[in-house]
Length: 314
Image 1 (cartoon, one colour):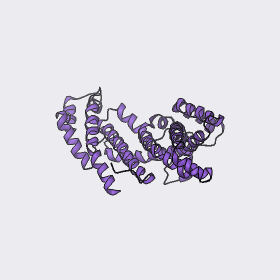
Image 2 (cartoon, rainbow, N blue to C red):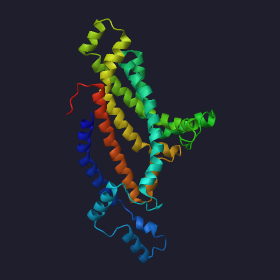
Image 3 (spheres, one colour):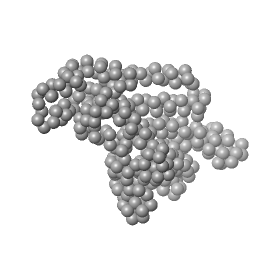
């Protein structure tokens, strides 16, 4: 297994390099000049020139990239032009918040989506199947920002069950932290659950027609054993791919939800960095997000081998 993961990491290295090049190049194509913002309203030419020298803005783009990439390999993603904090420190402060939100959303999605997909496939053509598909379509169609606002009005304002916004670190008060994050996690989880339901249903319909499922039933095994042990385990192989990719999307795509619930996570950091033309922060965030997607794919490959040991290393 370690050799397998090692090969996947080696294959991923060129992808990371390509991502870093695109991140750096596209960021410098954005309109606006962060140096002019830092120089203040007076925009003294001497101050502007000093700032350009300090942040190496006068160097050619390839030279700037090589300097940035070399520092990134040593764990230095630069300094925020706006707050003067190390980018890695900013990411370290915000990433745990978004990871907690993404993990809770994914747990909710798995608890709803996979059982609904199995039941829908098992009861194909019945009212249960139709109901599950309607609910899944609704989950995909309802915008996150609208659902979030409605939940705040109903659950927080009207009923007073959960806090409307804010954030409580998990290490300080786990119960309060879960309460604060439950609504935004549900908002994100519903859309993910709908996607999981559709993929699980499709995979289960294919597996339930296979010979080994018919053989298991012919042996007189209980239907629950056939569904869980024989059908679901094999159907989970493509679903694992979806789960890992969706987790990467959650890390990168929780911007609107974090803004609605005023959660100080990755999303707010991205928005602030883009509006302030904070090159170093945007580059660091996008690079970390790309690496997270690659890591999720490697984990998916490893999970394949656990779920189905007969799969080859290729």
